[in-house]
Image (cartoon, rainbow, N blue to C red; front, top):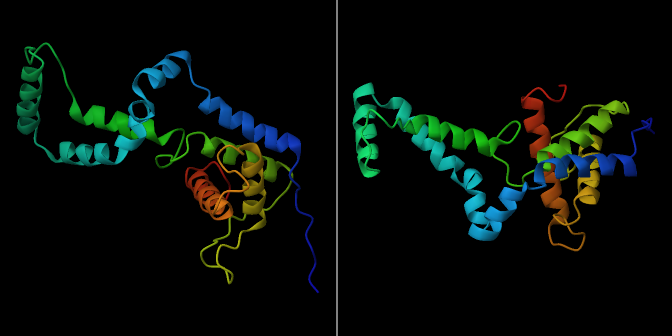
Length: 196
C-alpha cells in the first residue's frame, strides 16, 4: 500500500479566478462587438485563422532578395494608385503581425481565445497550494488519456469555469478537456510561465 499525497483541492475561488482570467481576454471592447455584428465572427477572428498562411508568407518574404521585395512593393502600391515612394508596404511585417496577434500572450495560435489564461490561472492556484508541477503525458500512460493530478485539477477547474465551452452533457467533453488543457500547460511550460 503506497502513501497517498495530500494534493490541493479545487475551490470556488480557484474556479472564479480562472473565469476572471478567461473573461479578461474574451470580454470584447465595444468596437469589436460592433465589428462582429457587422461583419461576423470569421472576419473578426481572421488573425487566428490567417496565422498559418501568414507564417508561410513571412517565410517566403524573408527568402526574397531586396530587389524582389522592391518589385513586389511597386506592384502593390500600383494596385492602390499610390506612388511607391510615398506608401510603404511591408508584407513581411504585416505577415509577422498577423502571426503574433494570433498567438495571444504566449505560444502557438489559440483555438479557444482566453483558454490559456484560464489554464494559467488554475496552474498558478495549484502551485501556490503546493501541488507538484507534474504535467504528465496522457499519451504515454498505461491507460490512454490518463491525467496527472495537476492536469486533473486544471481540467476540473476549466470545466467548471467555462461550462458554456465544455457542457457536461457533450460528447467527448473529457477527451477535449484533457487534450486542450494539457496542450496549454505544455505551452505555458515552454514559455517559462510554469516550472519544470
